[in-house]
Structures are given as structure tokens and as C-alpha cells.
Amino acid sequence: MGDVSEPQETERQPSRVSRRIGAIAESATLAVDSKAKALKAEGAPVIGFGAGEPDFPTPDYVVAAAAAAAGDPVNHRYSPAGGLPELKAAIVDKTARDSGYAVTPGQVLVTNGGKQAVYNTFAALLDPGDEVLLPTPYWTTYPESIRLAGGTPVEVFAGIEQGYQVSVDQLEQARTPHTKVLVFCSPSNPTGAVYPPQAVEDIGRWALEHGIWVVTDEIYEHLLYDDVQAPSMPVLVPELAETCVVLNGVAKTYAMTGWRVGWMVGPTDIVKAATNLQSHATSNVANVSQRAAVAALQGSLEAVAEMRAAFDRRRATITSMLNEIDGVQCPTPQGAFYAYPNVEGLLGREVAGRTPTTSVELAEVILDEAQVALVPGEAFGSQGYLRLSYALGDNDLTEGIERLQKLLA
Ligand code: PMP
Image 1 (spheres, rainbow, N blue to C red):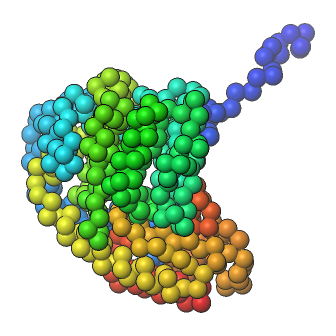
Image 2 (image 1 turned 120 degrees about the horizontal axis):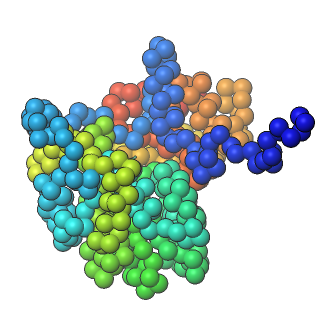
Image 3 (image 1 turned 90 degrees about the vertical axis):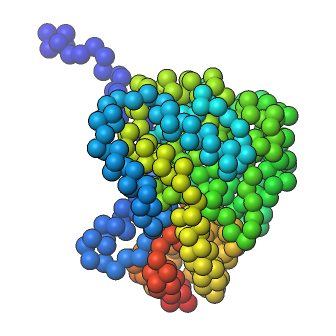
């Protein structure tokens, strides 16, 4: 009798967390940042090179616009899921002003930060089995978003010896009949590399020729040094517009990481599909943040010019100080605010009585022994590298790298 009352289906043990979500790794960059912040809160003198955010306040006029918006009852209600018409118009104007790319409001979806634009884009483009060419080192969110959407990331590696820039030949070698999308990010997180205009055009022409979509992330467009340029791919290859999605946001340009406003610009069918998804997932981005973004985009680029001057100075300091360490090779980044040294020369060497053999282990030793937080290259698909954000105060930056020099001497 006891047997009869047993549940019949004993073979199938559904996991508590779904396989799809259980497979997602925690964002390594956010994890390093929160570990550093927690240690700091406990009183440890940690210096953090982990965060991917400007250390400047949001410009006053943006904050004032948000404060005014908070007092206006029109902003206390739901608004169109795809974004406020005023913000879409401001994005259209900004896109024409900054990159010379002419688009219409129907091609714009306002998202909860650039991150949601990444997620929505891959969700709208990919079916199971679709392959996405992913220049590596990559920003840590891309492969997880691609997998969540059912796609398969295909890494195309470009190390220090090729300036962290993939070639058309490499992309061609990685191309299969299942290749649907190429991810392009210049200036790059994590490497700070900026592709020269000719390379942008060559890659765009290659994608067009093979009917491959390009998802191009322009979030660091205004953080360029040494007079380099980072033209928008669909401007250099206008025929690509039908198979190209441009990602952007206010986070890095206006020191607005906490406000959570980004966007995608693409062909209307893809943008419509992504808007439908967003209408069920999150609805409109917070109206106050959207109004703040309107003020930012309609304002001048003076604030980013000031930040750029500070980053430029820190870039020179961090690069030269890192290169003084035996076993570290750090190319001069030309964009964003990251240094991406190769540290293979340090692996297998004794550091404070330990012998790290991977960049993850090295980053752990550095955090424990020098109380300096940085992100190991594994987070970006490349062993033997470290990422250091130089968006921190000049004094902290110098002290942090001095600690590294001492520890690794
Ligand atoms: N793209 C890249 C390359 C980034 O580095 C980031 C932020 N780390 C984003 C997009 C997204 O930024 P947010 O979601 O803060 O707008």
C-alpha cells in the first residue's frame, strides 16, 4: 500500500533554479567592486581599480532637471514603454550631432541602462543555434546576454601583440553558416583599444558582404585620447544600417551610471520587437531619470571634456607606472578609462610567499597583500591579464600602483 502512495515521477528532479538562469555567472566586475567596498566599509584601506564608472558627480544642470521632474506629477505615472518622446527626439539629435548618423524616433528604444539595451538586442536577434562572433577580451556582460538569448558566443581572441584588435581574417576564419551577429566595441571595455577608421570600415564591409548583423557598442564614444577618432560603423558603411544595432547611454559620458538610462538604435522591426519585450519585462525607464537624460543630451559636452582631461592625465601615470614593474606589459589605451596590462610575466613567480599561476590567483594575492582591488582577465575571457579602471582620484591611483610596485618588486 505504501508503494501506491509514493509519487510516480521520481526520476525527474527539477533543479530549484532553472538551468538557463543557473548557468549565468555573477558579474565579475561588480563582484570585485562590492568585495572592495565591503572591505573598505570594515575599515581596510582598500584602493579600488575595479569599478567601471567615472568618479565625478553628475553635472549640476542634469541633477536640477531631475529635481524639477520629480515635482511634476506628469512624471509620477506610467509613460510609453519604449521611452519618452522628448528623450527619443534628443537621442535622434545627439546621434546626428555626435556621429553623423541620421535615424528616426521609431528606431530608438530607451532602456534601463546600456545593459538592458544589450540584453534586449540579443533577445530580439537570436534564436537557439545562432552564433555570435565576440572579439575577446570582451566586456563581461556580452557572453551571458548572448547565452540567455539562446545564442552561442564564439570568441575571437586578439591579445596584446595585436593591440587587442581582431582582424577581418580572424573574423572570416571564425565565420560559419550559423554566424548571425558580430559584436563590436570601440573604444573597448576592458582593453581601452580604439579601432582606426579604416579597420572599422573594413569590418563593416565584411559583415555587410556576408549578411552578418553588427551590434556596435558606442558607450565610450566621447572618451578618446591622442586625437584618435572612433567613427560609427553604420556611418562609414551606410548600407549596414538595415542590419546594425547601435548601443549607447548616458552613464559614461555624463557620469550617470546610477541613473540607469541607455538606448538601442536599430531597424524599426528589431526595435519594435525589443520594445514589446521591454513592455512586459520592465515597462518605461524611470521618468525622472529619462528627464535627466534629456537635459544631459541637450546640454553641452563640457563636463565630459573635463573628465577626459583628468582621465588622460591618469592614463599617462598608470601606464608608465605599470610598465615599471618587471613582468608587466601595458600598452597605452586610447579610449575609455581602463588599462589592460598583460601579466603573464608575473605568473609562477613567488609573491608574498604565494605562487599565483593564473590572473585570478594573482588578483587575489594583490587584494589580500596590497589591498588593491582589480579585475582578473578571466572575467573578460583572457587569462594572464588584469583590468584596472583609472576612473579614481589621482592620489589613490598613485598610491595603489606604488603598492603594486612594492608587492611585485
Ligand atoms: N557597454 C559597455 C562596453 C560597458 O562597459 C558598460 C558599462 N560597464 C555598458 C555598456 C552599460 O552601461 P550601463 O548599463 O551602466 O548604461
